[in-house]
Amino acid sequence: MMLGKVIGEVWATKKHERLSGAKMLLVAGLEQSDGRLLPTGEVVVARDRMGADTGHLVVVTWGSGARKVFGLENDSSILCEAAICRIVDGYTDLEQLFDTQGGV
Image (cartoon, rainbow, N blue to C red; front, side, top):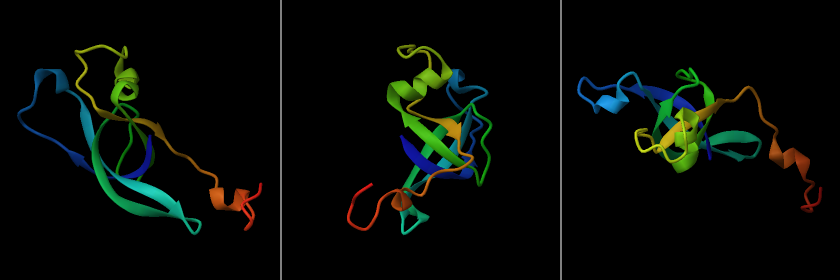
């Protein structure tokens, strides 16, 4: 899974019939560093069923996990390699959970 921020939408006038009605979003990957979320440089096109929009913090899942968002895991009729599975309301600053010695 990947934590990311929706930075745009992808659309096409011609597409495979099984993608009809599918919302595709551009998601920029993020990682936590010094208490902030910083871009990783990775950008992915993810299918959206959650209703995410530009600026939303989301979780993207891959492969069979992405297909499960839309149906059965091995359903070959689902064209999806990456899917948004959550819109994030908040997160814990992981660095605050550990002291400087690496202990809990």
